Length: 184
Image 1 (tube, rainbow, N blue to C red):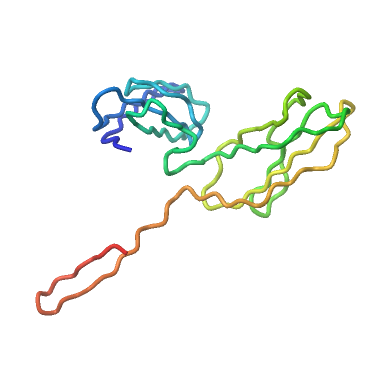
Image 2 (spheres, rainbow, N blue to C red):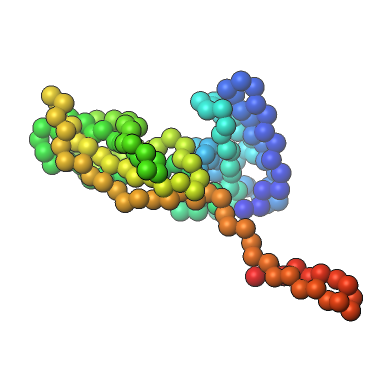
């Protein structure tokens, strides 16, 4: 990424982000809100309508027209998680209830997805997740009369958006009275 400057202007729910890139020629800007891919422009300016007080805007710039924004997202990705599952083969399945548990808390419903027997898989994107926190998700198939099926549980996942601080060694030279910091 070669973004050299960000300028963000916000008025109520409208946000305009402008970036400066050191790339030359045709530059493709891939935009993300809280880690969720929003699309690509060739303009360094993009407007957004926000539904949250605090939203992180990130952009990846490239000259590669074939750049895959999902395979090469910004470093802080994901701030959200895509919960994905294979469809139920039960003919009575009407929809799925997706639940999330944060840390040792209780299970909470975060959305429903209609069952589509023509699709092999379904997914739901979570709201913003808290950094350095453990999450669990489960998907529960629900019949048309409201009976729950057996849940599909995903493994615990720790969300880490904040990168580790770089490691340094410190050396003091008494002869020159200087301290040297070296990144490890």
